[in-house]
Image (cartoon, rainbow, N blue to C red):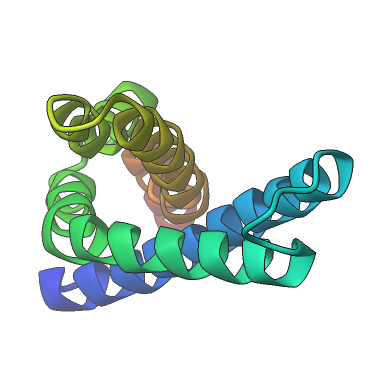
Amino acid sequence: MKFSRQLAKVELVALASLVVAAVALASFAAIQTSLHPGPFFNIIDSVRVVFLYTLAIGCIPVVVFGAPLYAGLLYRGRASWSAAFAIGAVPGVVFLFFAISLGLWALACGIAVALATHAICASGSNPSSKRTREKLRAA
């Protein structure tokens, strides 16, 4: 598979994983707001803010940093769970220097998105299984 095609696939999967993470965080925010209502946000506003905030902040690291780096590793056959974990953790670690709560949020989301992307994209990219299939075809 060409690298540009691999990159497009990884970008789409990573963005879809980001949407799933945003939905999960928005659901958590809805539960939190229903248990402890605050003076500023009702449940709908809380869900909307957390969902959009997650997408807005997470989109740039996914598109510019995470997906291209992971696609490069996947293309070279070097993608692994530990590499995906590290790629997902880097933006959160950077954000930790600016704000602890933002950094922890970015750390959790980044790792979840990176691991979900690896789970989806790396299935079927095992070079050893390709060699085994080639040997079976040749026999």
